[in-house]
Image (cartoon, rainbow, N blue to C red; front, side):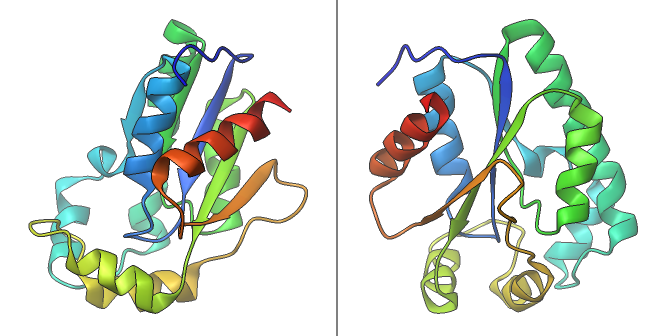
Length: 173
């Protein structure tokens, strides 16, 4: 479905590790003919090492990361008019921080699934720094988007292309 053009906005695909943020984000960006920003690329080296070592990030670890990603989203919006990013954005405060940094229309797509399904997906990501042992801390931190957040929720039991198409319909609505 390439060639979709929407009003200037940022779309952030969110959820815990292993939910499929990067896969769906890349498909959406391709369909919208806009940049895709991988949120993991904006973590500091210290944060990556902390996670690789099996320690969960704290808010103090996350604030600068969210600010860096938010500024990159703003730059991409200014240059391209639209952008898709993958970011866990687990808490309302994190989503609010991103909204404040971006300062434009931001839509969130929350990808959800069972703990068991997520663990299976995490087991199929060799070489990724995020160990499956941190999934429970992410699930404990997760605050599902509220009805007033311009967010949609999808259960990731369908092919990524079907999820992409559902998001495109929602964005066009």
